[in-house]
Length: 94
Image 1: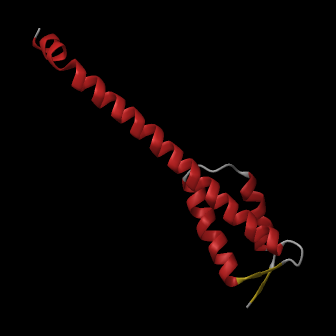
Image 2 (image 1 turned 120 degrees about the vertical axis):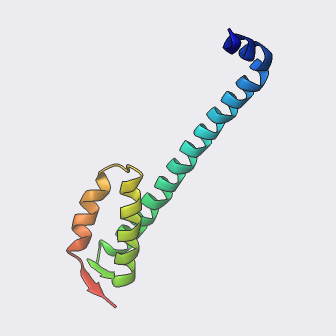
């Protein structure tokens, strides 16, 4: 009975708190999707610069690997996996 009285007395604050949590969740999900998109774009930029000559600098390869690792932790899709396999066969230049 006390729970019902608590809800009756504080329903405005409870609904506000639930709404704020929902908004925070939606915002966090949008931020994570934006980060994934940015990482994917970075990796595709490196791929586009190197695919014709099949040469990659060690810094580009390192940047690709770091971006790939984080991208996969954020559950990025798998088409980047094929690009990663192809980039490993590129000649590393300085």
